[in-house]
Length: 264
Image (cartoon, rainbow, N blue to C red; front, side, top):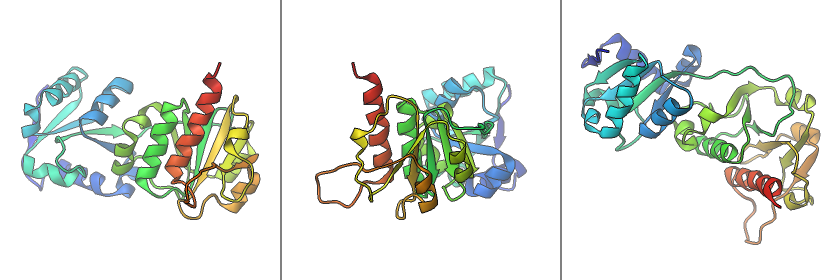
């Protein structure tokens, strides 16, 4: 397949890519996402398949990993665009990275009618690093479904994708979900974290599927959602700190469930 070269900032395709890189609204409207860097692109190829478009900087073609990825894209009949190095920076948020991007169709799985598998419900988590970290921990713990409320940061934004390190590609991610309606459909226990409870995580039976409910970094879980939870739990700690970061809390919860499921 012939590699198309773009050298002008006025190129219509380049302008479209710049808009996708800069605007969450543009990404939502197009139903497309940009994957930035060798690791995400390689993981997409392994877990999902060929992208819509492979975008590579001229100098990056000297990198052996990049050449291998480009060759795999050629075999999969993916369109490839080579950009002049001066044009690549506006498309990437990675400093001193390798100039490689995939344009992909954002996965849009069908919303399940009820909760029956271990999953994560996120109410207004706004920091991209926290969201990506929660997804990475969830995937590592065998959780496969992530439900994000309307107030949660965009799951397929470049910053969340980087923090997730490829976890997105093994998860079913649902955005702009009515969590109240979803909780009403739950066929499993819903476990919410709260600093205002005496029930402790380690006293809970997690040997069966549960829905984990985590809230906004400062305000926590909405009180309406909290009242709908089956259990409100606290994570005990010995140090003189008020609470854990939401991503750290999630990781502790997930791997307590892993411990209970794998103990002999």
